[in-house]
Length: 456
Image (tube, rainbow, N blue to C red):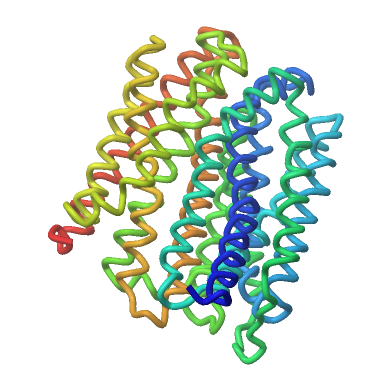
């Protein structure tokens, strides 16, 4: 073997590890916080359901930054901005960990979304730049696998750190991982930019999208607490902003989400199914967390370990997806995914027995994993190669924002019921039924919208 080729391969492998660590902490942090909401709420003196904005605010800022990170990287350097994102994530993690009030923690989490929104897409960009045409697919798949491990292990890490130390250590633990990732990116990534790309920012589109989603989310969240006129008016304003956003995107030369892509029926179908599948997944995480700790009385450590039923099937499914897709096709596998989500989440509505709960989480995990990856792959493949970047960014933004909305909806539904153990149990069961219906709607979508691709 040529020594130069071996050295280049080793450098790329170390860069993959560095970029993977950066994405790992984003995913692990999200799901670790979800399982730690009850003890966080107890220490901060609020209900667990009131802290859902720790998740929602983070995702809103994450998506806003995600929309512009690629363009900023093209202009100012992908490696440079990846390093900036890692630093922001580490510093703000300390701020979150030191927060003394629920309001301060929510604000800090929103700021944390800025760092995550930079480092997540730019980690992919620097790996793509360092890869050859022959290795780029494999390298991106490996990078995605590392990020998926963060998703799978996040609840476990959250439970262990909260029980052994304190929920604050979920955020403090981000610092050493960020430091290692920063040093490795600094040493092994090459700077790259595309000053002639000609891409432009669309700040008005970003403001309209985030403003619309935020107004709609707050309006839905306040249904149990505000008068009909107040929450309905805010929700309506949110929808109006989203309509204006949609109309402007039709004419924009640098769209945040290129709505013109939805003229392609296959892209529309995969995006819609992905939206519903990821909504069901995010709703499941909050429902299972509340059911384990508020209904069944699990400690945060036991709840985190119990999430291994979900995490294990998610991790297993991520490695079996390519083989199964080749054998039965992407659409059939996607239908299986949404069917498994419907059944698995439906179990949480029907029973609150720990054995059946573990079976439901195990079954749903396969559907969640395939329902996340396959719609993205299908949507990208449905368009010409020249639109891959725009298609990927659009469908990813849609899926992440839909998950954020699902979190708000579940919190609102639980909050509709009395603030006592029996009331919370009924609210959690009702939310599980609602999310099972969302997954079943996704299953219907695979039949109605993707029927032309039944042999794919």
